Image (cartoon, rainbow, N blue to C red; front, side):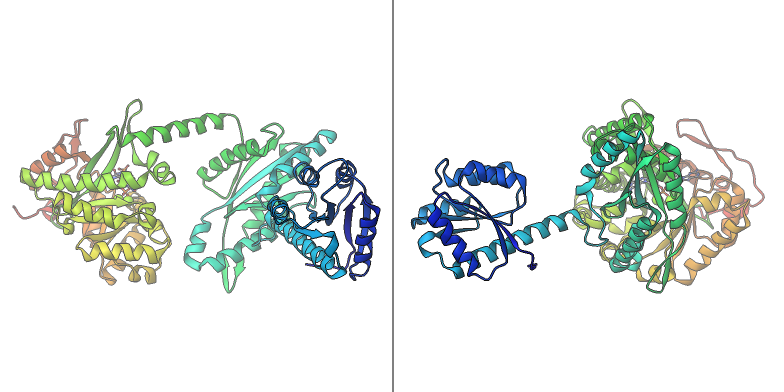
Length: 601
Ligand code: C2E
Ligand code: MG
Ligand code: MG
């Protein structure tokens, strides 16, 4: 962008005749300019250090130094955006090339110096300079929201700290991460997501003071630096003000969007003085806020470092777990709700940690997903479960259905289909024996890409189940779009069914919903006979839960099946576990027993 403000020019030239040539050429060029003249390199360096120039016209043959040395001290050691034009008394291609390569904008022969040439050279120099400063301006601002970006964090914090040192106050750093922002992007589209981010940026500016700095760190992460806080109380108040403002729905197009944010707070200088340390402290606090149920704020405290250390250790251990063969699959039977016969199993991952013993997937799957380790681990799960089905087959146990859980990470951009194909050919398993469980939440993320992947697996004969159904926000429209076979009602509904009318109703509703769109329905987490009865009454197709069996190692599943087959009339009594996964049916005759018979094999 060229404006009419006079161009600030520094002329570095020892020869009075040459200076007057330049002066005359400039005057006749029609450019508005202001020019300072110096006679040698040392003065040139001093002049550049003391004020701003748009353009430096530099004689190559100076009395004290070589022109290229002056050029170097100007550009290397000083933060100037001035464009440099060299002047020489000779025509040398070689010299021209070398100065241009070092970053000069132009190279002019004094003998050819006409107003037109000089004007063009300076115009070009000016354009380049404003282009560069525009670049730095863009570089420091987030183009979507217009807020400053991450690059200003360090400087802003340093300035704020200096200011607070004088007034003996502190700087509060509030790190914000929107809750479930990805869902908005996925369900409403990226333009709506962008609009939401813009609205939130405005909201944050509105909720803060002029002296506070709101920075967009990237994605749905923002940080607010608030100087001159007396104590933590002030930070708490600001956080609450923001949480409060965010609890109002935001209008995007015609939709009212409800979005909340979690806030992690660190206080400088107490919790760190560098932007890196403050970010890390605030991030640990944010992690706690998210874990505490979102839409809340948490302050950093030192104990968080220990937990972060623990997480780091866990990640290192997890990276080695595959090659150290620390993973194991347990299998939990799924039964036909009407007959009680085992219709299949679900493979569930266990981690035999060398020091911590058996670790449940809820403790490490999220970390495996965050680190994408779930991709190789998930591949191992699929291969191992398939090999196990084939091994049981050899032992005479026909497991015609084995569920494998898939994470959204595996579905999004890993070569899952290639893995699937190679597992099929390596193990020889019939793909119709495999069922894939995807949680409702994962399914709704990026429906299009996921649907294609699921369809390909389904085309081969495998089936697809929505896991933890009822906890997400899937709509009937989506469910109809996706290539699905089964809904698995989330355990939370089953365990509350007997005490909460609402949960019983939801369960009943899910069963009829499944029916209406041609999907089978399975309930997980049935622990008591009463729950099993209720599920049967609702017309649920399949049941899985501790009532029948806990997840078991492969050999014990085999043994369980043998016993389960032998005592069909007892399938509905609560099995007792001896602590090693060996189950003995209680053998109590139940009133509803006749309902749960299944035909002898
Ligand atoms: P999920 O797929 O919904 O698996 C069912 C969970 O409920 C299992 O927990 C199972 O042990 C538990 N469960 C089954 N019946 C009962 C019951 O009657 N009462 C109670 N209280 N719990 C019951 P688990 O094995 O701890 O797995 C937890 C979650 O971890 C799974 O939930 C699944 O989302 C994930 N997961 C497990 N294995 C894998 C895997 O190989 N890959 C991936 N991506 N995720 C896995
Ligand atoms: Mg599952
Ligand atoms: Mg589940």
